[in-house]
Length: 221
Image (cartoon, rainbow, N blue to C red; front, top):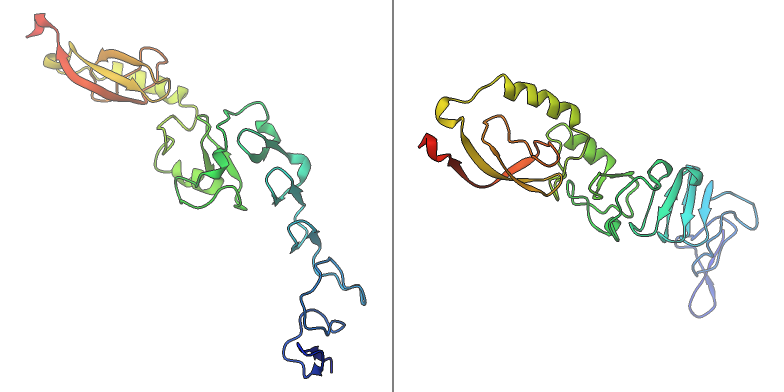
């Protein structure tokens, strides 16, 4: 039976081996992928920087992120401004926000930077876990942080145009106007009030919020 070295240098009965059967010293193991004596493989993937052992998942170590990520590496690039590894199809096609990966996911409030769940970049530049993004779309279409549309809503806005045109307001509301703020372009405009939605005059989005009281033209009062 292997023995452990006590503080006084004497060998005593084993009380819990650290490592394989070839290791009988009472100090910490030197991290490495295989046993020097029997060549036992401790992990299909091993990072000598993170000292991470794992099954082969095409992992790679990102120096800029400071951690290992699930790859394959050629499918990702590191955005220096966002400070996160993102899918190659987003290179040059996403809005950057400095160090956005250091924020928690606004849906689950869990860390994004070190998460194994892929980050999804919204058009506004904010990040969500991909799984949280998919769940969010079941309930709404807007970024939970800035209220910008999280998906291309152009087709739906045109459908809403038709519904508004087919739904006239009662005569007492037909000349009522209201000030609105657009969540998509951040523009302000004054538009005709409608119960189904108020369309931004600048970008034609219905992702708007009322920014003032309703007004009726003098000839209708």
